[in-house]
Each structure stands twice: as structure tokens, then as C-alpha cells.
Image (cartoon, rainbow over all chains, first blue to last red; front, side, top):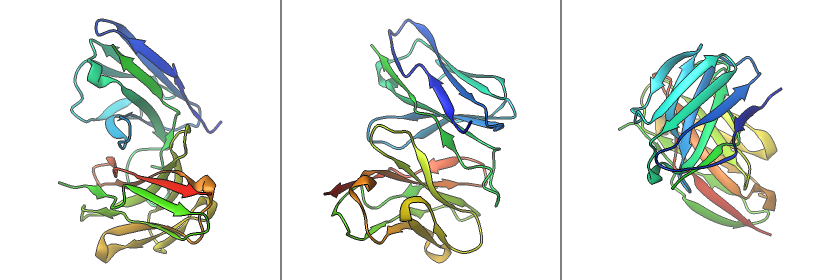
Length: 118
Length: 112
């Protein structure tokens, strides 16, 4: 299995809703990432987990709350979002975090969850 | 600020033309370098990568890139493009702090 699976593919929510995005990989990767991508823009790093511990938080507002229940799963909990948070949310994984010569930090991306906040 | 710059935002070529997309990064330390591609309606996927060794790296679908350390560049090339190469191309850099930073992307449109 060489895929990163994201659900749901599409999500529409109001500003008072609570919802979650889910990401799953079975490649044995120990680093998992959330990126946000707006139309015609590059992916922007949000969070990185390494061995199920939060390693990087790019000063993301607290209305986004990541969770890594185990080495295969990554969630992004959403609460009180704003319309400007509408975007494609990408999950990615790599064998591990960090630089090297082995290619262990090559990202495998999921197809994304397209979020619309009304 | 440390950044990745892609000079061409939108490139239009005819089939069989040669392609070169520029990528420069401003980080002075050790970096790992990547090109990712996003075909229409598909997810981001790795095109090629450079970690060390031969600065000329070959990727999938006939693409190659050359790392020139003195110029802080990692330009993507293909001698003869095809209509199926229509996609958005992102240069990316992994820095010592483990962050992976993407350039703004180049939208490539190949005319049949």
C-alpha cells in the first residue's frame, strides 16, 4: 500500500460547526504532515508529527487542532472556522522527518479534503 | 527570509519544445531539493529529488534537474515536452530545521 488516504473528499461547514478531517497511511511512515493549499498557491505547512509527537506547528490558529492517535492516523479537528479557511487540506507522510541522503523525507501526498466554510 | 523562488508563473509551450523551469532558494545551509508535479485533478507527486552526489538528477517521465550550488539553483528540464506534461510544477526545499518549503509553482500548459 503506497497511498495516503484522506476523508472526506469534500466538506462544507458553517462557522459554528465542529468537524474533523482524517488521514491514513499504511506505509510504515513515522512522519505525517498537514498542509493547506489555496487555489493557485503552493502548499503551506501547518503541522508535522514525528513518531506521533507534534514536531512543528507553523503558528496555526487554535481553531485547527491536530491529533495523531497512532502511527497510521492523522486527524485535523476544525472548530469555529472562518470563510477564509476554505481551502484544500493536504495530508502527507514520509518515512521520517529531517534531512538526509536516503530519501527518507520524501513526501507522499493524499488527494486532499476540499473544505468550504460558509 | 529564507525562500524558494520559481521565476516562471505560467509557461505555454508547443509539443516537442524544450522546457526549463527555474528554481532558486535563499537558504545557505545544507538542503534537500525536490520537484513535485500536480496534474489536473490529481494529487501532488514527486518528480525528482536531490540529496547528494551527482548534481544532475533524473526523474520520471524524462525530466531532469541540475543542482548548481554556487547559484543556489535547481532548474527542471525536459528536452521535448508532451501534451500530457500539462500540470503545475512546484520546487521544494527541506531545510536543516526539517521544514519543507514550496515555491509558488509554475503552471505549464502544452499546446497539442
